[in-house]
Length: 215
Image (cartoon, rainbow, N blue to C red; front, side, top):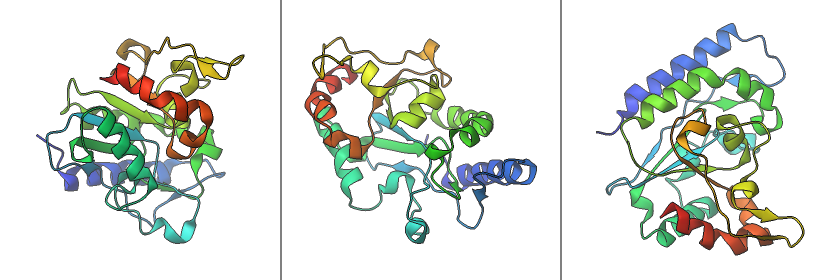
């Protein structure tokens, strides 16, 4: 059974509004002028979950156009990136359920102000656990370093799970993932870089090998 979009939206709005009313953080306010975003739900059997951080892109003027997690309802480079991951897993984008840890917008992209995310983590994490409880046993990909750090530990790096060797600039091949008992979500997590980072030589040259452990 998939989440009812209306129910999920109401719970996310309640969290946002409660945080806004009770918040004493003034360095990156929650933006209540934009609605929460809905998850992306593929039309086929869900076989992979993608977790993003939040929908607050840098360009304020185009934020209002974002209504779906990771903008996956539109054709763009991020959708192509996730589609390529799916293809290498023998899946398609229609097998994806994608959602954000934070489903509402901030005034500025909060990866620049991580303190606000840690302060607001608990209720959003509980909603995410509840949301994903309907997809038991399905592999989970985290997208980007900030969300990985929020769910594991503040110094977590994607490249560590991809066994980056600083001397060679390549992977040693001993790939790992965040086991359920090692993170706050309580599910196995496979860390991936966000789409712009895949242009870096290390990630671009290693991604196909890392995908094999997700299989």
